[in-house]
Image (cartoon, rainbow, N blue to C red):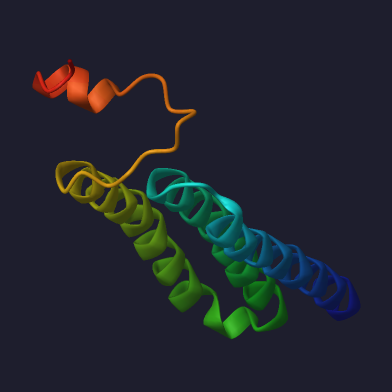
Length: 112
């Protein structure tokens, strides 16, 4: 049983690390701040959750603490990315030329 938990924990840690790496790559590769926020938030949330699950498999005594950390991240990551995106929109951050629709500007009456 310990070997199975160790294997599963290791696989979850590798998968989480891969998602975190891809999230970092997305921050470099995306064309504007809005796409970077999206890439960073989605990939890092999943990567962190997988990493925490892997650690819970490897260290069962830490499970409650890791669940609390995971819950905190699940509640704060989407909210913080939404706030950053609104702040970037309000300050007039440049959008990629491929951006065709701006729903926030339509909702607030800023669309031309």
